[in-house]
Length: 84
Image (cartoon, rainbow, N blue to C red; front, side, top):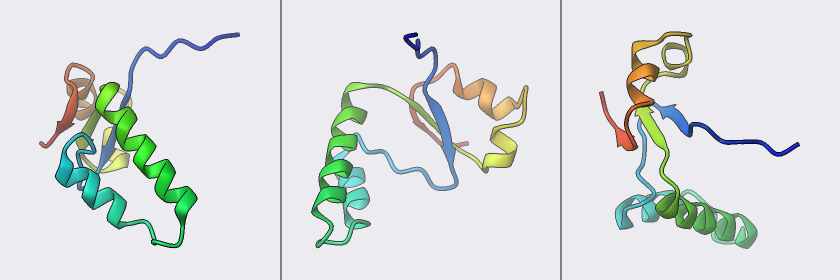
């Protein structure tokens, strides 16, 4: 059975936008230089982020994931990184 993605969203206390050069550099700086496979995966993930929009809301996971959460509901209407 094929899955249909209807929403891409998430939260982070301090989200980093992987679609910007600064964000990509920050994300890649968290990977140790001797971990070539992880570095390649992180680069690929940043490339995907530039092509596929996803909402990343600045919020704590417990607050964001509550059913009917104002934060999560607002995030479903926006794309990219948002800070509340």
